[in-house]
Length: 138
Length: 488
Image: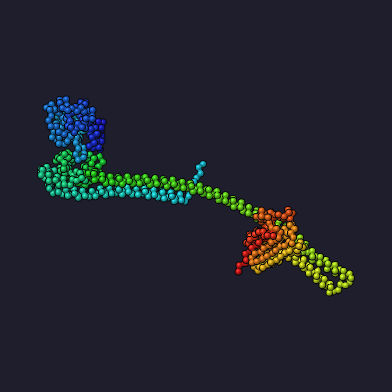
């Protein structure tokens, strides 16, 4: 059931591509299905903060500390040592490809939404990816 | 139960025009829809044809600079990628938003990978080998089977209207796909123009529908009005018919009444005439009696010889002839003329006087004749004689009634005018206007019917086309008859 919900959400979001509301919905459905903690304590870049601040599922912190569950964004310059090994959900292909802790990404390419997951990183963090999302593993 | 309204021809015409306008407008609207759709399709095909030629050139270029395995060739030469991407960048415009080349890692792959990207913006530019999953993957994948260009329009992707896929086929296998994403902007401009045009058309159609209903309403009101007018007209016609019938009926009654009046008048005149004939006959009857007595006496004295007998017999015969002539005159006088005849005032007057002159003379009334007219009239002589007789008799009655000294009746003719006057003192002014009215009489009840002058005026003015008027002279009344002379 969860699979269909996610698929539905994905295409529903795709229908209204780049619409922030639906992008937010995708995040709120996708990430809680991978992480069990609620609310998810996240450290995000400025661009993503604008998007996620309206959601109660995410607890956005201004400093990356040990309590942070994951990072969301495209680039983080100077991370505190406690935060350097946290899993990251990227918002660009470049970040997804280059950041070693990036386990997944959602970004736009040629006007089309792209979801990617990195099996190796998922395994490293012992994350459980729902079946419906496994098709997006690179 | 509702009364069904009859539809007039004008309403049919109105309704037909309104319906024709409405059908015409809908027809034009339908044609506009068809035409705009055709223009959109032609625009699409024009774009496809153009991009077909461009992508063919790109494919040829890629084929010419790579050695069969495009992926391997491009992977091995960064410079070659740069060069080809430079070519693609030149083609990217507002109309062609994204131009890039992809392939599949293996036939089973559920995604594509970028080989070349013509993006100008570094943020938008994909990397060589970057995985790419289009939303309609299966449609894209079908190009490996079809091995020919295909395109599909989008609704789910913002800013892209249409995607064109051109396969690069090497040795019968699809080695790569050139992808061109058409910007929505150019297409939107056309769509927006058509939308505006369509909106204007819809407003026009709305107004035409409004006009249609206005015409229909007007037609209905007009039809109702015509129906009411027609109903009223029918009522008026029916009323008119009744009125005409009533008028005819009244006319018939009046005619009957006139006939009765004429008959009464004739009877009255006949009574007078009998009296006059009695006067006329008295002298010849007396002469016959006297001649007969002379014959009897002379026969008794045996002095009646053959010659005397013949002489006296001739006298009696002449008197009898005179009596017979008087009867003929009397009969002719009361026989109404059915056809017009030529006559003169002199003939008419002499004829009347032959009947009444003796009677009048016996009453010591002088009859003065000044007959100076030779005019010939084409009219009804007997009717005219009745009028002359009536006027003379009226004068006689007045002269006797007023016991006028030296009573006199003057009969004058000049041209087409006949004047009969007396010296009886004239008609009182207060009754002068009424003397031609029926049943109006100044005579004693047993003597006057009140129809004589009425009949006279009717005969002169309505039958004979002339004029009868009255005026007073210094000594009495003057009646003037004016008839129209016979045209040559």
